[in-house]
Image (cartoon, rainbow, N blue to C red; front, side, top):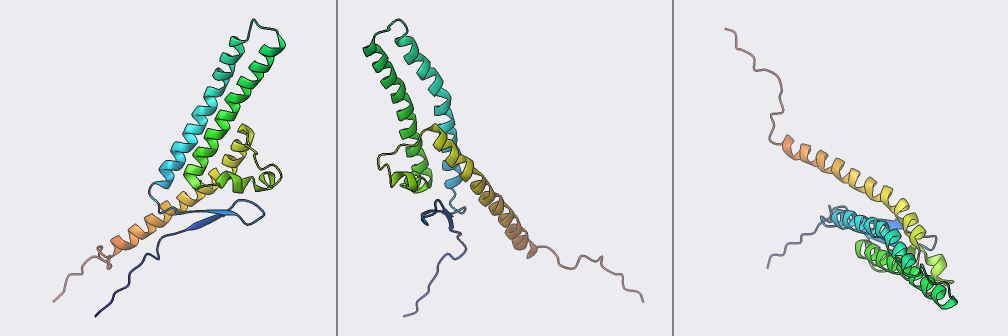
Length: 170
């Protein structure tokens, strides 16, 4: 019986180290859905962040005419809830893009001391400020690599001798 073996050795896997403990995420610029998920997730988090001030203002108005201690505590709890909801959803979006526990890996030094840590908006911004240039670089390289590969494939079909045909003289 004849046996053939095939495999994809041209697929790129990129490890991105997230902390000093050696934790990493692995992505492939050859994954056709990754860039779409990244852009959609980034946009979703940006849109959620844009909604936070309006939600906080809504809570502020709800307690506007109440000056008692209980109202102040309820207001603080509701305002905190808006920020907590944002953070939970942002963590979910990031983990959906890069894989489970990406945020825990990135903030591992904090999670080891505070196991129930939930990164706030500034932490989420910090993560994206670091990861966006890496993703841009990966996809710029992919575009460049695909252009070179396309030219190499097309070279097979183009005449290699670019000299004009010479007339034969008698």
